[in-house]
Length: 603
Image (cartoon, rainbow, N blue to C red):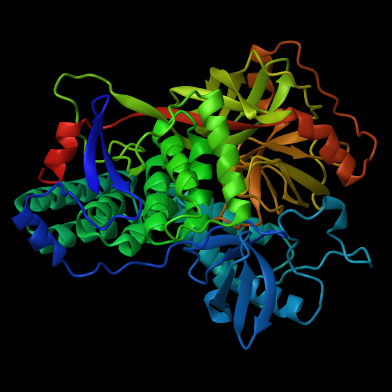
């Protein structure tokens, strides 16, 4: 039976495992009308997972990414393997040009063009000691620039490639020809919504229009007109393709009303792709996957949701219910995944003292990652949960003092730092100081016992090897520290906002982490990733530029600008690892109360 449960003034939709009967939020006539809605047309959701030999893969349109292990190329079809053991078949032509080159090289036994994500930094050179240079094209440069979120970042993409040596002369001419246009766009401070570039004012108006369309869709649901609700929500999703709000509401309707779990899972997956830190969407996606009999995938999403927000009781409840029925009623969870689920469940109920489930029902979560519809409780009460919506990296510069990017801690209601010695140990932290112009912040974590990282204000020469450490994609790739290597491509000047550019593999979540030289010293703070997930270059704030800000709040901070002893890259990793931390930014977002939730869906 599906029902609406009200617990502590929150509306939680629940489903019993193995049941086909449902109590709807809508009146019978409304439910009948909406059940006739035409199936929504959806994009394929991002492939997810972790592989034994991780590597980022990007679609040809650069809208989709995944992390998986390359297995083989079979008649122009690429076979990838997820950590669960499931294989994925992807047409070679659907991958970006860089990945197509990688596949062809790997299939013929040649050294890979791009080092796997988790490869040993000391092993990324062929036997002859020479790096394999990728040849870039003007078309690829433009595609990478178009994938950035601001024109300023797109301009940096062009400057990065023009500073390097991977452009053939004919391609360099074309890239230079496009440079003035990106300079013009950057001067106007254009931003991207979907695939359209516009001013910040236009972007804000676009977002407001999408919210209005969502409200229209909710009203159509209340009136029982399914087709009009579908049209409004689809339009909202199209207007603002960076927001997951409309997809989230479509997922709720499909899961709770229309009883189409496959469509619900697609909607929630699309929401998670757009908003990776949305805990409510991850929870609801897992529920849809359970009722679609994709039990192993459901476990992965609940474990990730638990990592992001262990205080959310419904996650522990749902995991407990799945564990309880595993092996019965056709619920088959692999031994590997049931062990993962059991370990996470035990942690949630012991460390966070969540109640054990007494009714074997799955609990949906209402919109909570964002205040989607602008609703407020009539009594003005702030009735919200702490939901992890962002993460980043940082490094210790003094006892209990961490440096990171300002955008990592922006708008936080609380900060958590994962203890490098025990990732299950989450330490409370506070923002001590911010410099929005430099995009720097200092975080105080009194309970953190970690050594300070060595610092140098001397940047390596252009062409020198560097290492980036951090936590790309946050907890989606696990809580272990990751290290990647590359070269210094361009030194700071006015044309690149005073940043140093490098070509080490960098992704969202690396922000705020250290850029290190081969003496094991921090020479920069990772600030930007130019391009989408899977991009292989970034920009860092030189420590010389950050020095004045840091010394204001850590007057005893010291630096050694002299060249140091050259270390092996594994030794650099070992030196920096105890000082590099993962930071979770948790924001208090409002949950709608039971009455509001029911009104929104016609109850």
